[in-house]
Image 1: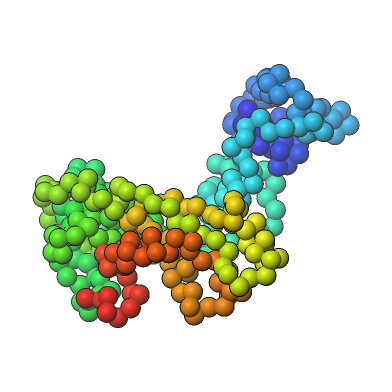
Image 2: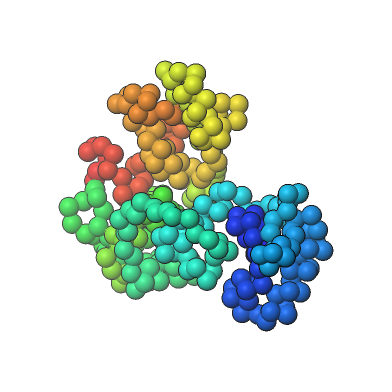
Length: 287
């Protein structure tokens, strides 16, 4: 039923052969499914005898509200990037499109699986890790308890025995996993991971009224603000990806956003920068 509703909404037509191919069912079953949809949403679909296909009606209203424009575009992106196979997508006709492909941070299964299992089994791992704060790889014990994605790369959120802090370890920089032992630190102690905070973004001062309205529409702001709720441990990455940490160097046209609660986030962002093993923000933060 979701498939039929999706194809009607985005392709404006649906026929039996599409159901037969996608679900590997008989024509009789496809006819029965279309008849069932017509009973569920009788004002959504009509049969065109001339074209011998079902078409969207003038009274159509989505029966499954989950499939909005954002869902469609995310699925289109997944198709274009090869993350999703066409056999797993509800999209029928694919419009001409392309996506910017960023460099992939390769993570091998041999090094990732021990981290995954350590999270599940609450274990510590002795790993060889190349930090950007140090010139050479070092061996250390870490107790990973979660995975985080900053928009470009995955990292393990882990207790670092050497620094006696919870830190972020980029998965692609783990060069080897050697030993394992039972973890002695509970993940519940990682307060920055378990606590959440709002990152409040607004249109930057200095924009014209027209520019401000455009930015507020671009980001779906309500009352002139966009509230992005995230873990405290990830707040720094969110601010960095939006380039909100470099305002003094940019004109309002180049960076039209600013933080509405910068003072509230200052300490959290500073701590995240310090505890990120991938941080390269300033020379003084490197080990």
